[in-house]
Image 1 (cartoon, helix red, strand yellow):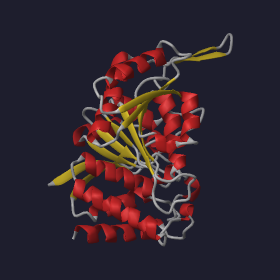
Image 2: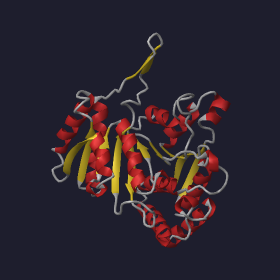
Image 3: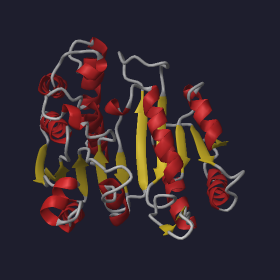
Image 4: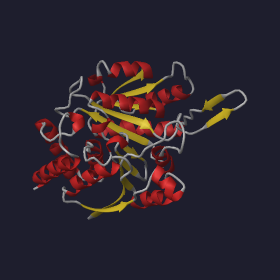
Length: 339
């Protein structure tokens, strides 16, 4: 069968890491029908007047799955994040971020295996902001719903059970935010009763940050609200080598978008030196989502082999290998493992 997938290369280094990832995916022998859309963000604003054209949303609704490179988001001004808009329009409520140690990468810890489950559509990212010009006061509302909280909590517990994890930690600020974080905590506590085989605990967000940089091996699956999850997932990425080597997925009941979570790095765009590992690991998640476990295992094992060997590494990991050569080496190993 052929998998029809919306392909969003993004901007900056996006097209380069997307090209590398597509090459590695096609080395699995699976057939892909790529529905490619080049213009997102600033390029789309220039061409269509909006950063996320409706035909891109329609494409994902049609294919039900997308692979996406990084898109530049203006800081403090300009258009709304394409990522946030995608998540809200397609109701991709579960942001899933695995942060797992790769061999050969210099980091302060070994054997880190964290899964961050971040509620993806509400909280402080709901976009409910106002500005009082008379008093120069800006307000932002963190909207937390029972339904939105329950579904990400349920997603985390079920994922933990089906993927062999034994610990779930809910992260909150219920000591101060008694209604919003308090509700999230209570719902997680209620759900934990239905999973007696899992070790369950809770941590206040500031304590959790400290815990992760002292003893990350004590934790497996972490579920939390939107802003806290955004912060923790980047912190956890730093424990295993940075955003350039971790995967990301946005999953809802009907659609899923797999993406590189790092920035678009315009300073090195077009130089064939970007590390495509993050998007490649996201592609591995996509393969598992499609039920292609054999291909996903081959991709995973080939990537581990590359990093264990330590010869074909890109500049961010201390090597001199180009983006294209990295993809060539990885694709060759994937083919060998599947033949």
